[in-house]
Image (cartoon, rainbow, N blue to C red):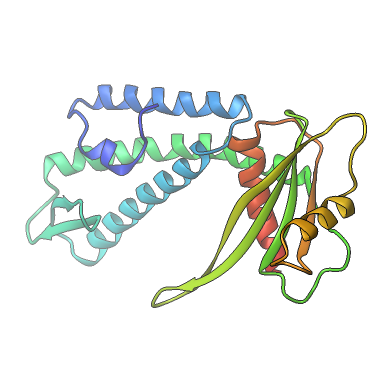
Length: 237
């Protein structure tokens, strides 16, 4: 699939109709992915793309309001509009901004489909503790089923804290330690937890969780990414 980002608009052909056709085709491909219940990476891409378009549009409106004059160019490296004191915008920049105004509502419509599907999936994922959860919860085990593949993925997770100059962030790292095929007899989570404690002695009293999922959507493209975000919110709440 053709990438959807601000650069794909700015460095594309100057033919507006051709650009519009390319963008409509790209959006159609994302909608087809959503119709197949495949959320990622398309949803994350659309969220980022919509944010870029909104930032550019807001930057233009703010600059025209504060500094009435000529918008000459776009600084791609810093995603900033370049201003010079003159009347009106440069024709090429006007064309680009008109294309941005045309693209944004169409991106939002497809994005709305994706976020609706995301909410549906999230509502069908539950997270429960296995046994007594210790006070240290930044590391442990998490059992995530793949109903479509009849497999339970046993994941070891680790939550890390990092920060930049303004904010602190948490990241979730998962590593699959085993995968159990679900047959007629389903092993209880408590049994799986005890087996992992015996096998991996460095976590003698691990925080352990199990997710219940009652829809058979694609695991890697939908269930796991949505479950990870819900799991992170559950751990950090």
